[in-house]
Every structure is written in C-alpha cells, then in structure tokens.
Amino acid sequence: MRKLSAALTFSIATLATGLLVGGCGDTSTPNGTANSGSTATPAASTTTTSGKGLKIGSLLPTTGDLASVGQQMLGSVPLLVDTVNACGGVNGEPVSLVQVDDQTDPKAGAAGMTKLATLDKVAGVVGSFASSVSSAAVSIATPNKVMLVSPGSTSPVFTEKAQKGDFKGFWARTAPPDTYQALALAQLARKKGFKRVSTVVINNDYGVGFEKAFVQTFEKLGGTIVNKDKPVRYDPKAQTFDTEAAAAFAGKPDAVLAVLYAETGSLFLKAAYQQGVAKGIQILLTDGVKSPTFPEQVGKGSDGKYILTGAIGTVPGSDGKALEAFNKLWKDKKGGAPGEYAPQAWDAAALLTLAAQAAKENTGVAIASKIREVADGPGTEVTDVCEGLKLLKDGKKINYQGASGNVDVDANGDVVGVYDVWTVGDDGTIKVIDKVTPK
Image 1: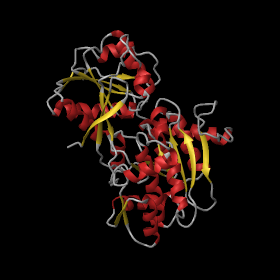
Image 2: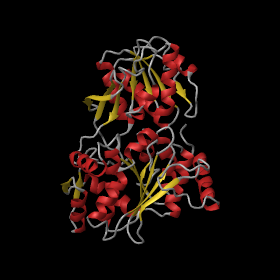
Image 3: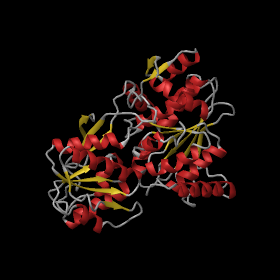
Image 4: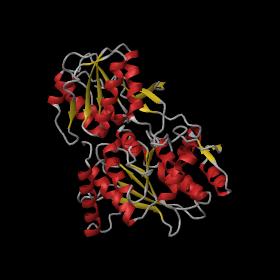
C-alpha cells in the first residue's frame, strides 16, 4: 500500500462513514473474524460493556496478510481489560472493550476506526499493526480526539508526521520505529561480512520506510546496495512474483533484505526458490514475517528441507521489567507463551487505562494529555498495572515500566527498543539466537 495522500485518506474516511451510517447495520460476530461482506465493513465483538466507564477499542488484523502475527497479539488487550476490571477498573468504573478486525486493509481499517470513534465512541484504541492501516486510522482518530496507540506500526513516516504536528498528540506506539530496526539489521549484516546487499519490499509505508532507512544506514557502514537505482517493491495484492524474485536476486548479492508480509512474502520466497535464483544467497528478514507458521507457509524444497532454513532476521524484542509477570499471567489464563507483539499490545492498552486514571477523566483528550506522563514521568516506577492505578487514584505520579520495555514515549509518540535476532532451523522452527540494540 503506497503512502496515503490527504485526499485519499479523506475519501476513505468519507466512504467508511457512508458505509457505516448508510447500511452495514450490526457488524458484530462472536469471534471477531471477518464477515462475508465488503472488505470495508469491520468485524467486531464487544467483550465488556459499561455505560459510564472508560471505553477503549482494538483495531488489529485477525485476517488478511498479517493475520499470522495479528492473532498472536489479539489476546493481550482483553487480558489487560480483565486484569484492570478485577482490581476496580478505571475512575471507579469497569473498562469496556470493542474489538474490530482491520483485515490488514487500510479501507477496512478506516471503516473500523470510524465505527469505533463515531458509533462506539471509544476514548482510545490499541491499533493498528500494519503501518498502512494505522495511516488510514490515525487520520480519523485525530479529528475525533481518540487516542491511538499502535503495538506494531513501525514506519518512520509516523515520526515525520508527528514532528509536523499532524496528529495533535493523539498518536503513540509501543514498538520502536523502523529507523532503529533498520539500523540494527544493517549492523548485523555488516557484522556477518555482507558487503553487497539487494532489497525487496512490500510497497507500503512499512516496506518503503524500512528500505529507505536500511539503505542509508548500510551505505554509511560501507556497504553497497546492488539494486539501489532499481528497487524492487511488490504490490501488496500481487499473487505471482516471478519477475520480482528474478530482479531482487540479480547481480549476485551477498544477501537479500526482504521486507515482507507473511501471506504474500511466502509466495515471493517460494518463487525465488523455484527459479533457483536464491541458491547460495543469505536471506535477511524482518518482523513482518516472524511467526511460527511462516517457514511452513514458504514450504520445503525438493530435498525435503525447509526453503527458509538458515534465514536470519530481526524483530522488536521484549525486555521490560513487567515481562516475567506478563508471561506468567498469559500462561495461567491462556496456556503456553505469548506470541510476537503481545507484550507491546498489553503495554498499549495499559497506557490507555493508566493515562485515563491519571487524568481522572475517560476521554481521548484526557488520555492524550497524560500518556507521556505515566509512560516516562518522574513518579514511582511500577510494573503492575493495578498498583499503578491505585497510586494514581491516590493522587501520586507513576513511571510505568512495561512488558515490552520501559515504554518511554517521546514527543513524537516513539519508543526505543531492543531487537531479537532470529533464524530458521533445519526443522523449520524459529529460534532467537541473539539480541541487538541499535547504536
């Protein structure tokens, strides 16, 4: 998805409003999955209802190109709401949650955000994950004075727009921007001795933003981008990738940086294998495809081995002081371990509730005015959300230390994080083998 122009964003918002007011009716489904109608109609389910208390929403992908990652984080927000309500709620009332599937689609995301802002009248939203969807959503959240906190939209475009004042304080994220991840991956590539690298990216805010940051950093480190003058950027709706695969691996690079989403990315990598162009070339991947099912999606070669064996990548990691407690809570309530971006989603929801309590008001304006204060203020460090809410209720200040990290939100809504380095083993499992902090 290309960067949305102001005119297109307005058109999307207008279309979404028309669809919602004009004829979509009740879009709720029991499980929050996509319905069978237009892709502009969001699927939603309400998990807790209250007339007077804080109402928040989630706008995350349970279907579409990022479903494999989105479904890993989906349980975090209701888990946070249940935890908060068990210890008294916010401002003396239970918190309500409305969940919407953005379908990894900007049009559906715009419709979902319009519904949350104008019909459900939420004060804050956890979302979205895809940067292109968040670009559409924030253009609706801002004029409606809804605080949007993304657990995974990492495009540097948001930093640039925040610096210009486009979001008026109604935007933040708990995952660091790709300027940092690109720096970490470029440093990793040079550390491994790669001098000549080609790039292939999904043509949207995420892919192009990452590409730009990586190219700048890799060249500063003395590396060469083989296809700099002819970058390979694929259409998010493409289904065949023979041409893109041939172009990305041309020129015999040491490695190919592939910034992909899982559904289309698996087709691209399979096409590269089938053409034989990827043989002997290191694959560098990013967070957009790190899910346990991705190696299986790409598949096995004629020798029975996983095509992705030996690929390496980076993903925003979690090293927060609250991580151990979060992992234990997840295991107790859901079983197993939380997936990618689940800690970031938990922290996004936590910041919304803590900011509302700090402001003693359940509105988006109030949350926006206090979110940086509770995230990076001079108060008592807390890792437990309930403890933080109690201190705030008593009129004290806090500095929330999250599960994903310290979540010190800056003036642009950004945080700086640590990155896990991962690889695909012979058995197709993904293993974290290192951590890297960009310098």
